[in-house]
Length: 315
Image 1 (tube, rainbow, N blue to C red):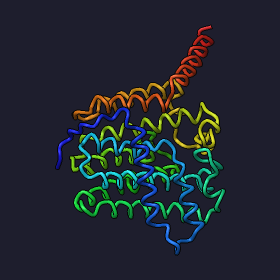
Image 2 (image 1 turned 60 degrees about the vertical axis):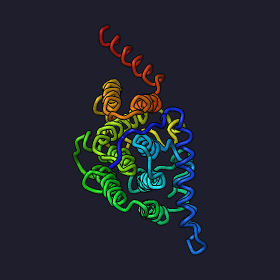
Image 3 (image 1 turned 90 degrees about the vertical axis):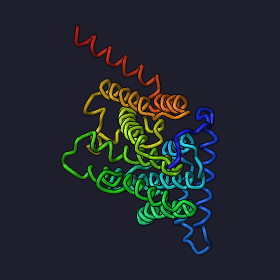
Image 4 (image 1 turned 180 degrees about the vertical axis):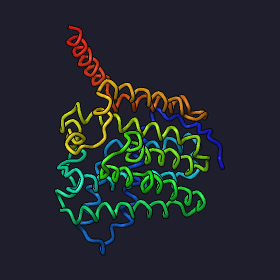
């Protein structure tokens, strides 16, 4: 395996990574957009993927690949694309009436509202298959790495601890919060960090903790925003956790407790970045993401609310 000694600075390349991800997604869509393909299915699949959200998972995958040398960029791109397509597929299914019955996602109409439930189901399924097609196409020159990538990404999506398991825990009467968060969100972050290392031919294990803690932090932040923000700010319906009785850090710990938990997770993520030449830049990238997930303004609001409540109790 290669060495984790990437010399490319990671700060200042977020936009180039975003451009690289969008180009890679378009490339792999071009392979399935044949005249023989059902046009509404193709339209629905594109609607589910474009325009994207933060693309944090594929960006994380490429950032780790860069930190590890990125000696097989086509494979790194394919891994990033596969992870993003799996994520988008999970959102399509999550929005359907059998789960959240959401009207909007990323600020636009959800797939099932625009194209109907049958086509939404097929869209999610099609994106999952497309993810594996992209990985197979991009990994032809590195078959051994590709086999490992198939395994890591499958673990992030399936049972016992991937997205599917996380969604299934919502169907159970009881679930431990951390277990739910690791499965529903954390597992695909682990796939992103480990996938980036594998694509570059590097041992993925040192990168696992970064993905695990970032993923859990991302879900805690989502729980906080679900309580604090409105639908137009989120780009999706607000208050979904309470409405559907889902496990939530904000509900279990309160906003102050959830914020403390989030901050601890992000510090753990910063500390867990493995030794490499770009470690300082990677740590700064994690800190920057922390501010995006829970902006300082939101932290101030939570602190003020807590202070006001404490004053009332003292009085």
